[in-house]
Each structure stands twice: as C-alpha cells, then as structure tokens.
Length: 186
Image (cartoon, rainbow, N blue to C red):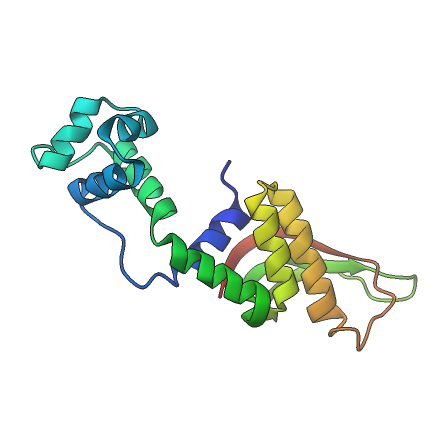
C-alpha cells in the first residue's frame, strides 16, 4: 500500500544515492534479472511473460507500455543501492535526524483559555533522530498513513510547539490535517 508519508520518506532516502539508477528498459531488466537471479522471477514480479523479459534483456524490445514502465521503474528503485539506503537511514536515526517541510492545517488542544487555533502553516523543521527512528520503524512495519501522520504530529508538538520542553508544557494534542505539501529530507 502506497501512502503519502511512506513515499516521502522513500524519496528522502533516494536522494542519498551515489549513482543514478538505470534509466532504459533494457538496463532496468538486466538489473532486475541480476538481482532476482533469473528471467522467470522477473517475469513473475512484473506480471509479463518470461520471453518478453528476455526480449528486453537482449535489446530487441526497447519501449515498454506505460504501466509496465512504471512498475519497472518502481521495482528497480526499490532495490537500488541497498547499502547506501540502509546507511542513510542509520545516519538519520542515530545522529542527523530528519527535516520535514510541510504546508498543512496545524493546531493543538490545550487547557481552556489558550489559543488553539488550527490554521494553515508552512513549517520547515529539523526533527530529532528519535522521530526519524520512529518514522522509519513504523514504515518498515507497514504502518498506515494515519499512524505516520500521528508520529509526525507528536514530533511537531515537541519540536515546534513545546520547543523541546521549554514552553507550552500543558499542551495535550497537536492536530495535523489538510496536508497540502509534505516532504522529508535527510
């Protein structure tokens, strides 16, 4: 299941790649054949015939249909540079943290008498490594978009509204809705 948060986390990790992924259909097929150790496995993965995979590998077929091209791109990107991907995640979860750039309706629940206006805000914040770890762990476990959104709301509560415990100590809950733009960066 694809989600806005998971896709944004994946794109942040992909920006750390040291080499570009293969672009042509033939190069992408050859890469997948090497990774999956055979044309039959690639054919099953892409839901095409084994003979069609062999045509792309040999270079006789060059331009896939749009739906196949999209699946091919997605599968290659998902497997490209696994060590670099793991290293970027490890760095984000231990030392560097993660940066969020979002434009959304953000507000909070607090005791009576405070201004808890939910309003459209554009925020760019560096989140601590513990929140990067929570986001990546939840993504690895197949968390829903709502769960990842709640983790992000908790991070915004602590970092933006409470300024790491220096203010707004009685803040109860942060609402993070109507997301217009969301981008993570490492």
